[in-house]
Image (cartoon, rainbow, N blue to C red; front, side):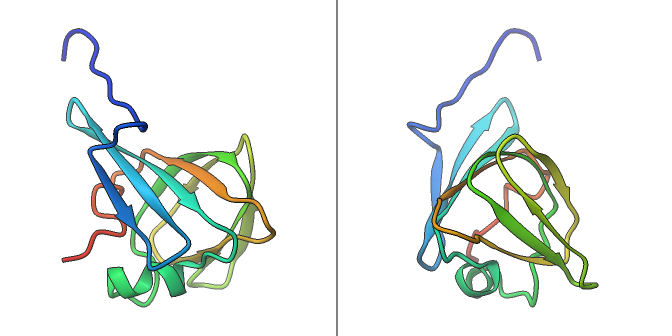
Length: 121
C-alpha cells in the first residue's frame, strides 16, 4: 500500500446491532477491518451476541483499546479479568464478557476476527 487510506466511524461501512444493548460500527480501510463496539450497561455476550453467533462462548479473537467504560471477560477455563479506559487488551477465543456498572463501554477492536464479530449468517 502506498499513500493514506481513511474511514470514519461517523459514517461506518456497516452497523451490527447486538440483540439489545449496543452495536458495533465497522469501518474497512485498505483491506483492514476495524470495529468500534458500543456496549451499553447490562450488556453481556452470552445474552446479547450469543443468539447471533450461535456458539456457546465468543470464538472471536480481540485486539483492542478501551476508550471508555469497563468490561469483564471470563475465559472458558474460568480465568477472569477486567479492563477499563486506556487499557490495551488481547482476548483469545473462548470467553464470555459483560459490562459492570452504569457507563457505556467503548472498545476499539483491531482483531483479525472483527470482520465476522456479531455478524449473522
